[in-house]
Length: 251
Image 1: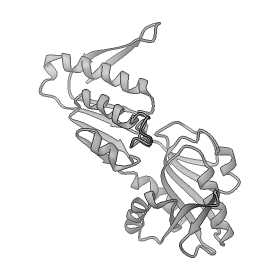
Image 2: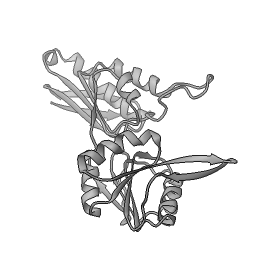
Image 3: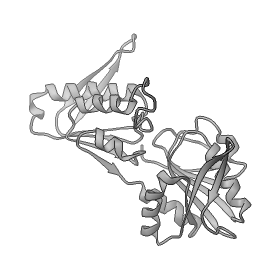
Image 4: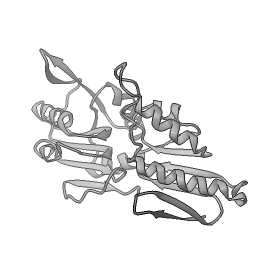
């Protein structure tokens, strides 16, 4: 199946189906415009009567709004719910999401399923040669534990707490003379990872590496180089041209 997308001078987006068949759209999905383009294609595909017996699949590599998985304050919008309603309105037969931030995304989006990032974590793990896995917080522990079991690797939990308003990292295990691989789903900035890496090295870690599936790094990227030895990630959010980063292509 093939389609064309046209952008008008006023930024209107229109789609046209040029060859019918099963529909499979793959997008980064980290902007609202990405979703509007998908909606235009899906609407054109639905209008073609010859596609009635075909199936439609949407693959999203970095779902916009996935961290807004609840209403944080009574007078604020529930952004992921709004985004999910828009995706549901397109009525795809299947929606695939790479390493969603939480199970809320899968609960809110109809016919959704998770694309595992395990193969990328495994590649990073093998390149470092058997590091201990470190979960950066309680929310990441379950996923990190799953990876540790599959890789037969050691795991060390950590958590960030505030004492008198000052953030402090608590490491729950021995990292002396060990290489550490911190694993998380998304990095917006680098402050928490920098603090964690500094504390790991303070407690005797040899080298500290970071794996994140969605490498946004909207701020704090430069500061990470002061404490992290190397970053592994996918290009689900953007392409990064830096020797400090090993990036696995999903887009």
